[in-house]
Image 1 (spheres, chains in turn cyan, yellow):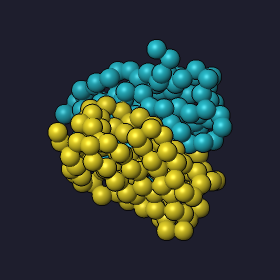
Image 2 (image 1 turned 60 degrees about the vertical axis):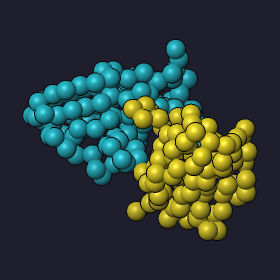
Image 3 (image 1 turned 180 degrees about the vertical axis):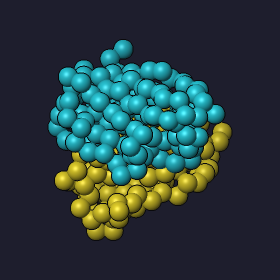
Image 4 (image 1 turned 135 degrees about the vertical axis):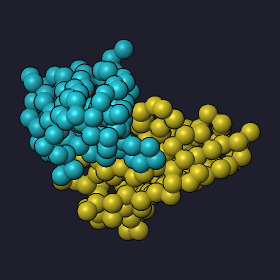
Length: 114
Length: 111
């Protein structure tokens, strides 16, 4: 399978704990995106990488959220001091170098904060 | 703020009918338009992209774009129960790398 893979698929944590999600994009894609989706809403942009450079972050991304993409390959999204409002599906997507905007999504990481 | 508007539905159509899904957007600089399908509990999957005014057909799907009216639509001909899903409209401006998504329209195709 050469699609976008995300890990873990499900995470249940207690409020105040830290969580980290990993995304492995399609190998030839140099653009990587993180989105968040809650029930009944569309994906909401969080952050974007081109190779290892984080080029854009949403104003909605509080300082409790941090993302990295070392060496321009996989990416991690860490949420510190989780809050119940962080409960959502965290979607990773990748795209080709040509800026068509066509995204290929992973299966997502569902976070539940108790 | 760039906005993408969709009626959340649900839109219910009988099997074999044409389903028409609509999307409007606020940013006149938008240049790329996408339709994604999302089954319940799954992630979005790209089904159509359109970049110029007019119609683009792919099998049973037709995307229609009218930039003057800031309107994009998706027609699904001969709808099947397997088409039942949420359809997300996404829009990207020329100077951005970030597609903005609407909230999606739920489509139900009943036998």
